[in-house]
Figure 1 (tube, one colour):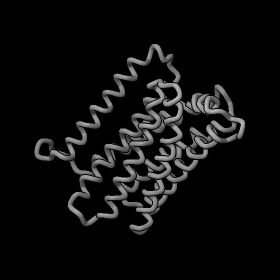
Figure 2 (cartoon, helix red, strand yellow):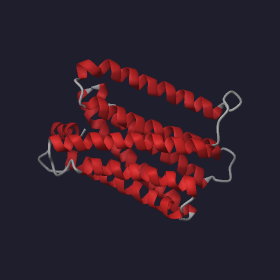
Figure 3 (tube, one colour):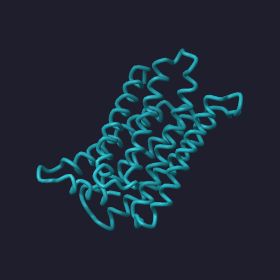
Amino acid sequence: MDNAALIVAEVVSAIICFVLLRFMIKPYRTTGESRYLGLPLGFGFLGVSYVFMGFALYFESFIFVDDLKWLQLFTQAYAFAFLAATYYFSKKPPERTRLWWNITYAGLIFALVVSYLVVFEPPMFGLPSYKTVDEYFRIFNIICLAYISIHTLRSHVSRPDPKTIWIPLSYLLLGFSQYSFLIWSIDSSFSAYVGAHVLRLSGLLVLLFVAYQAFYGTREASPKEGIRDEEAST
């Protein structure tokens, strides 16, 4: 893939994530419950990570490109962490988990701030090689996405619905994308690199289709019905 194609892939991925953010913010705006905040935050951070990588590819000869690549790693990992935490708490009684969700949310935000200090204050913090950290982060992302896939598949099995089967499939595609990026990082496989981008775009498009169907799939669907669809999917 040439540089222009890679930039387009990052831009398209970012746009899809920001559209998903717009869909996912609706349940939080309607209910005001903090447990619905993780999905828009997750997809927001995911979109920002693709923006960082797009800028890094476009300005590849500039000195600040390395910082953008580090920010992309951290931001993407936090995106999947927010999504995994949201799905974990989604099946818990809200009155029992509100405190734990707030603690988890605060912890992730604190870790996010610290990671940005690590990137922008290199004299204070010594960083290992980018390649090594990238591989560890890919493994972390795969674990998060594997958990989400299993969680959503169990939800589908407990409440079978033709629409919800696409949700675990979409996260599986994102997980395989991370695995392909890991393979590319280890042995520089060109096919793994191309496949990673194709799998990622496929997973995001499936999620976009599911989100659209949940809120606008039928003319008779109301906003509350859309929220219930999203609750069933998580």
